[in-house]
Amino acid sequence: MALSDDQIIAVRPTKKVYRDGDTVLKVFVKDYPKASILNEALNQARVEETDLHIPRILEVFKTEEQWAIRMEHIEGKTLQQLMEENPEKHAEYLKQFVELQMEIHKRRAPLLTMLRDKMHRKISSSKFEATIRFELHQRLEGMPKHVKLCHGDFNPSNIIITADGTPYIIDWSHATQGNASADVARTYLWITLNSGEDAAKEYLRAFCKMSDTALQYVQNWMPIVAASQSVKENTEEEYELLSRWVNVVDYV
Image 1: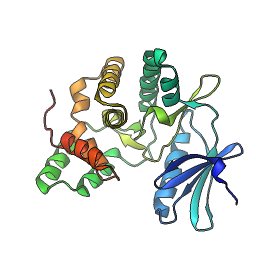
Image 2 (image 1 turned 60 degrees about the vertical axis):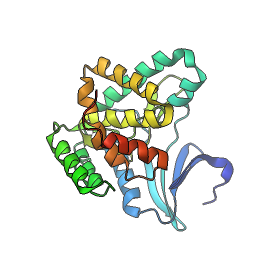
Image 3 (image 1 turned 120 degrees about the vertical axis):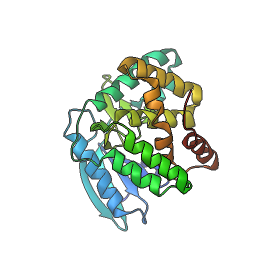
Image 4 (image 1 turned 90 degrees about the horizontal axis):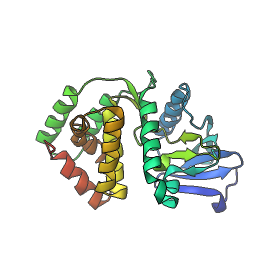
């Protein structure tokens, strides 16, 4: 199968995303673990069983020495693009963003990995000293146990708005079932790293108000989520910021 550079719509460290007719093709780097690729496709297939608007997986295959996932192409603009192009509509877009995340959390996908188990594994493999890892494991065990659908990387660039206004949520590779406030904490950290702390605080206040969630409840998840994110490939600045969150025991 021949793909050209002018078909590329996104480039990530582990994959390139191509537009191929009315489909999208994710082509992973040669050494990317096959199990991770199959798990990503499986996660998305399981979320397809809900009534959320998401692209459908069409096939998983190997092209030469690289694995690829083909799915439906959704025509539109990301919510991130719309926010940047229409700053006067920021409040409206933020409200839509929070409402979408709350809709995700209302769904169930009982065959997905438990968020708690995934975070325990990541904390164990983090670079933090044993005392900090022990405290994080203890804190995680003490958090309320839920089974809500969690996206795992919910941010405005993972929402596509079609011409008729329908929002489609993409990139379900990190989907789990667990406590929704952990998912909110992950979004808060993403916004902080990408748009600054003021924007993240605005998002968190909006979510807590609209969902009637205590701010402190979400904040209690911050060290746990930051530790789990620290095992990814981060810049030195990002790792320092995540480490600062991990070492904060109480928020004010």
